[in-house]
Length: 343
Image 1: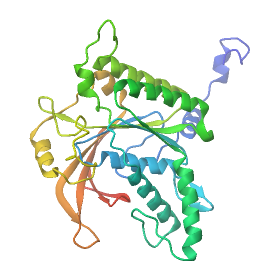
Image 2: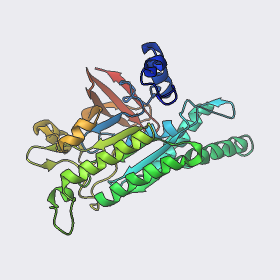
Image 3: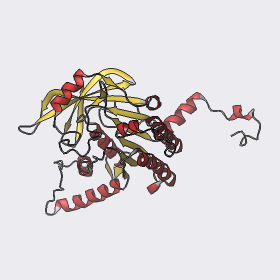
Image 4: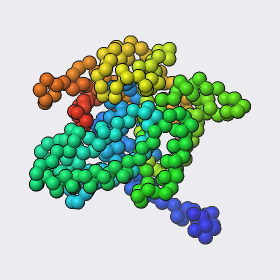
């Protein structure tokens, strides 16, 4: 910049901008991001690292999918307003429990809502004889366009995870489809905790300890954010008491564990979460790297559904960084959306 001003160091003062101009430029280059509830309460911008913590079945993965759909949906399509961001998402699945059908259902229902459809689809696309044929073609074209902006990577160990982060950097440099990665999602960051913790560096395999792996992960994410301002959303399952855990992060092959929003063993997990004290098990370098934290819990109370003989599980969210000093209750209606209210 000094060279542009003629090489005179004193010229830096001449090309400086005012505080008002700096704020205006910063807000235009990194505008605030609107996310579905309950993530909408804290002001989030590209460059933030958001940690979504909570036990199994607390809706962590569901919130990621809803945020992903918000990102890949365009703001407008064929003159119809959808309110999305129209940008790309990189989803790093460390739990190996990603459900593409659930993502497709959420996306199709958002498309139907944007069109003002009289019904919301759950699963297969319904077709009428004549009038819905054009609507079906429209939705399929938009659905295909959105899914082209969703990139998925499944990782089975920390080495694959760090390699995937390097791939995110290279993909951002190439700017796939003319749009760089805008959301990076990691589900979940503690998936390989026990494996990395049990590993000890040797002469043949250096840098494989939990601390070194975490340092590498933070370094790669930080390098990516320098190349491409993006929002990083990370889920994390808590560990309670003396190393016990209420999640299935390390028992992925057990058939008794289902998806995030299932009701299997919910009561026992609620009781365990209340009686055991939570502690952060990630190394300090990760804790200091995170800029925002939100905690999710499953409540005992249930809300009657509009459908007959159906109740909705209630969840609570609490922003701890920044501290909003309030808890918010929300519930999930099928796979469509979250509705929230304060307590």
